[in-house]
Image (cartoon, rainbow, N blue to C red):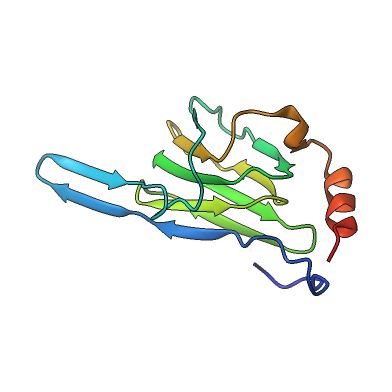
Length: 148
């Protein structure tokens, strides 16, 4: 993540990281492989996808208390900006063989969707509204109040 205020010792959030997926391609087309335990560090409980995003629209704009996710742009591209309450970083997802792992206590914004972009998200749990931070100020306060 980019430079910014240092996180106090003992409070590091699980790092956000790019995940290179195994790909196979031949004259018939391409195939990307995602496997729990190899590419995804959690059991997959839910899969959803984003599509038909209007030009200039933003998705995300929230954080999760416990949820872990792997995001993949299976078609087109998008930008994911993550924020751990201390620093921000942006990642471009632009091919089906590249995923972005986002752990808990990370705020995320999805922007700059290309026309026709489709993103799939693999999640560690079923939908739970109580796991969400919908307001950044609430998220930032929770990050700073986390026990070391």
